[in-house]
Amino acid sequence: MTAAFDVLQGAWRNPRGRTGALILIIIAVAALVGPWLLPDPLAQPDVLAASRPPTLVHPFGTDQLSRDVLSRVVTGARISLGVALLAVALSITLGAAVGMISGYWGGATDTVLMRMVDGALAIPRLFILLLVLAVWERVPVLALILLIGVTGWFATSRLVRGEVLRIREEGYVRAAEALGARRRRIIFRHLLPNSLGPLLVAATLGVGDVILLEAGLSFLGLGIQPPTPSWGGMILDSREVMVSAPWAGIFPGLAIVLTVLSANLFGDALRDAVDPRSA
Amino acid sequence: MIVWLLRRSLQAAVTLAVALALLFLLMRAAPGDPLFRLSAERPISQQEIEVLRARYGLDQPIGSQLVAFVSGVLRGDLGVSIEHGRPVTTLLAERMPATVLLGGSVLLLNFTIGLWLGVRQAVRRGEREDRWLTTLSLTGYAMPSFWLGLVLAWLVGVEWRLLPAAGMQDPLLEADASFLVKAADVLRHLILPAVTLSAVSIAATMRYQRAAMLEVLRLPYIVTARSKGLSEREVTWRHAWRNALFPIITIFGLWLPILVSGSVFVEAVFAWPGLGSLAANAVGSRDYPLLMGASLLVATLVVAGGFVTDVAYAWLDPRVRFG
Image 1 (cartoon, one colour):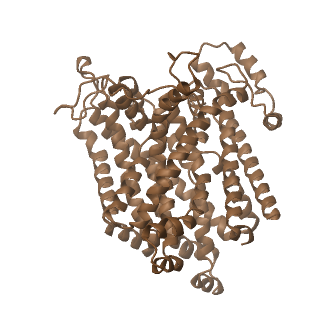
Image 2 (image 1 turned 45 degrees about the horizontal axis):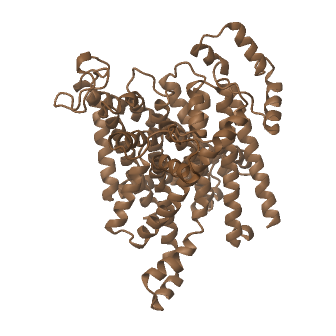
Image 3 (image 1 turned 180 degrees about the vertical axis):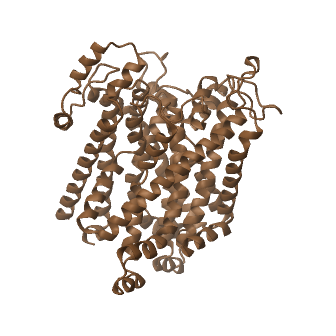
């Protein structure tokens, strides 16, 4: 655990990493508190006030249905971050489990698992999701989270397998084995805690990837379903009014850029802390 | 080298077979069958669905479906598109050139500008320019391609009227216009989609080139080159960069899936008549055979890309094949 803590501390000392982390915290707080302070993101108060440019009352303007764009962006943050965090937690767990088994058991188990991972990596994640989602009537959010999570662990398992192969040759693991430690103890005491650094990097960068992926799916009409506000869905809706009311599409896009960029800045800082040579 | 090549070919074949099996499983594991969504989208009678089920073999047991699927793929028969009523392979082949043109342009942009910027960053490591270039490329990487595309189409295409924002050719162009005029027209249409796709993907090239260059710059022969009194420019480009170019080849294999996924969105936004917009439309019209065909093609491209990358690398760097 201390290794992971050191990595977090290292990333916090990096100014760019700290900036990313702070912006992420602000966005998360806004996503949690915002919906209570802002107008109802589904309310369509006045058809005559549709597609209004930003004003003091509606800082991000209103969309073509007169809904407040700011409160839709903030509610969208809740959805996007929620989906991303849960899906990434699932992918990381699956990836760590498979990587651990593959790396530590070795032999035929390793070969079969890694060949399957190779095959899965050959189909871009987007296409796997398109194929599954295209037959779905209305995708429930929970199913979307599960699907994104289940399709995201392949590269992580490779990463963890590599870490395990490296760590298991270290003196302290050899010593533990010689002392007759059980497999479970070696895995949870030595292999897992010492791979936490790279896993943390993969998770942070994964959050950015999943936010982009979910936005893309929603943009194609396969992700979060209306009327639930999502950043990708808002950009899809704004397509037809891009010329008359560009703010309805620009602000959700900026929200995506800011969130993903912050996650990647923090992830980068984590990576530099894990492997200072790359800095 | 022969043994290595054989082993690597076998590995590629296994990977492709696994991908094929996964695609089949995905098709069958999805809730409901592919025709179910179709009935929700358009007026279609139960009888017509039965006919379609029989035509696509969905009434057969799963074992014979797998056999039919694999033998169809091996014969290059990917079925008939529901939306277009034409063979999937024909449709894919028709759309291929536009995507190759777009992908090739993005490749060219990334591997000229991206490499150049990556080298500059490595040389000025930790300085202000390095930090700003990293932030800039990461910002591009954080942008949804469809959003950047829409914003550029609106600003450059509609507000400023500088470039066409949709399609690949001007429909008003004379049919007997000279080749040069037509080529210039396609080029004008190409700029926005290519810039969009490049902006969201150039970060990877820059990052790899920077890292590879940093590895080389700390080697002793660079010190030797400097102590011989060579200018920084010569050390950077003649001595260091040549060796830092090798590792970049590997990124091509990694980068292909990103490009293909990105082109789905960018082509859809700019109505670029390639494979990406074909796939995006297939999603909209729930054209399952077409979507499956596109996924198969993409998986094949990715496996082939990885194979070619590895072969090129082994050919250039003997340590790989003898190591």
